Image (cartoon, rainbow, N blue to C red):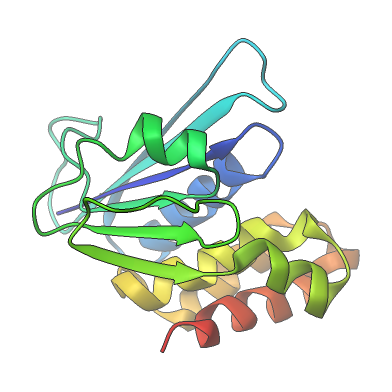
Length: 173
């Protein structure tokens, strides 16, 4: 079983990314549960999407001790990464999360910068982040996450989102 938490600020699209990840897991015949929460501020306030993925029935649908935490802002890292499992991995947007000491395994990628520099807009940062997450966790295949993204995003933006996914996937060495 994998417990994943995608966190950032409202408006970054991480809840959508969590939904897409859960859908990809289901497409591969796995069990998946996705939940979300965000502060009353919605846009700009801290938000998180949690995804539990397993090969068998999931008895508890909430993340108890995440194996992976994606933090797209410092506030999100401070608020949502403290219960990361001892063997867990913290994935951060290195430009927006300057402080990540105290964690054993940290993957740093300039997620938002890559979206802006390579795709022209930070709008695609959530899909870049999804590519990073899939590469680090291997929780679903790259082909499956491509299919899930293509089903969920507007048709006019499928190509840009496929590029965003590839950029994120390839950004992890």
